[in-house]
Image (tube, rainbow, N blue to C red):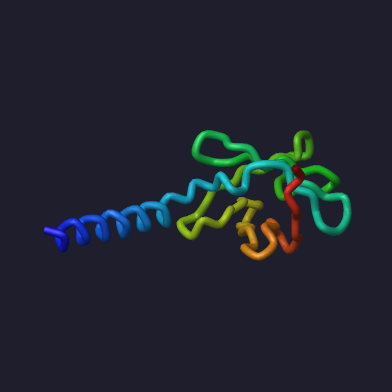
Length: 111
C-alpha cells in the first residue's frame, strides 16, 4: 500500500515537472528593458499568443519607421524570436544575471 502511494506521488511529481518544462509562454520577457551600454531600450508586451516589442533610443528591427515596433514569438526552446526582414533574431534571459540577451546586446529589466 505504501509503495503504491509512493509511486503515485512520484509519478505526479514527474508529470508536474514535465508540464512545467513544456509550458514556457514567454511571460519572463514581458516588461521594460534598458541596454547595459548606451541609451537603447525595449518594451515587450503580450499580443495574444505573440509579443510586440517597442524600440526606444533609435534601434529597431523592423522597417516600420513610424512606431518602431516588431512582432515576436517564443520558440519551442523558450527563446524569444523576432522576425527582422529576411533574418530571425533570437534572444533569451541569462540565468546568472537575469539580463535579456538579444540582437548582440544585453538589457537589464527596468523595475
